[in-house]
Length: 344
Ligand code: NAD
Ligand code: ZN
Ligand code: ZN
Image (cartoon, rainbow, N blue to C red):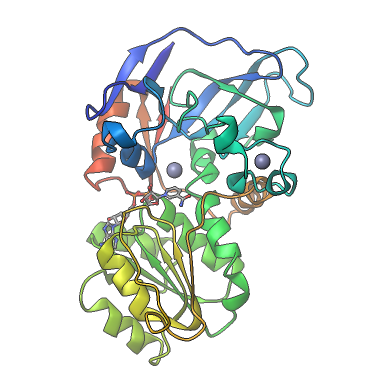
């Protein structure tokens, strides 16, 4: 089968031909109908050898949708031929976090060597992918695979972050979204759907700011030295009750720190490597800083429901397997509008 793999440290992704995998006991083989590209793939492919923990070759793709194609011994509750979204942050299924569906915060995954598809286990950017357990599949009925696939990360991750700040985002409050790419442009829509906050979006490219406005941001501003004053002005000096940083580089964390309101939240979602100074006077009274990771199984179901009712939609650029490597280059260069999705 065809697959997009990261094979050599520092070399970027490659289109390769590999053996079609067989499902073992308890596993499900999915025939992939769509796989999304995430900027985290470039984080992984940018790591030096001494920090790289994902194994080589690595089949990429941690956003996947497909059809149940073959069941391993003992699999129950999966219907052959039906369409499923892959819940990616695999956990042990047994610990307290997993018991409440928060496998993204599994306390035993590292110790047991459990890694998400595309981030250690073979991923969905291939014609077939093996899923380790039926609980990691959510049925999507007749939802369009290409339009749905990125909800598994670019939808789920902002949704999870926003839900934990939701109680603060009552009418009259403000949410700031920094970085309106794959995650950010869905985050804006989730904010509009589940809160009554005014949404201010920041990015460094005019076309991304245009997309932010299209998907519902009330204001879209250039992420530069003027952003802090402008956000203070728009909020009558108060600042934002929640700041979602989908970039996480030093300049954006500096903005986040300066615009968060008293008792507000800073949610660092982007893994750009910036740091926030911590200390009593580094943020306003009562402010909290959080680094959320992906989302829970029930939240995936909720974000899929938001898409089904039309409140949230992913702006998709569609590519074939043969075009996937070029799509990765576009993502690297900041050229993708919304999310790039590969259709095997
Ligand atoms: P993306 O490339 O699609 O979007 C990033 C956006 O940030 C782009 O629109 C870009 O123009 C913008 N940007 C870059 N520099 C900026 C700046 N200084 N100010 C404002 N905007 C700026 O990336 P993505 O796939 O949406 O991922 C976003 C980040 O989230 C990445 O760091 C990714 O690794 C991370 N991520 C984290 C999780 C998690 O669980 N915490 C999950 C998925 C992705
Ligand atoms: Zn991702
Ligand atoms: Zn667990």
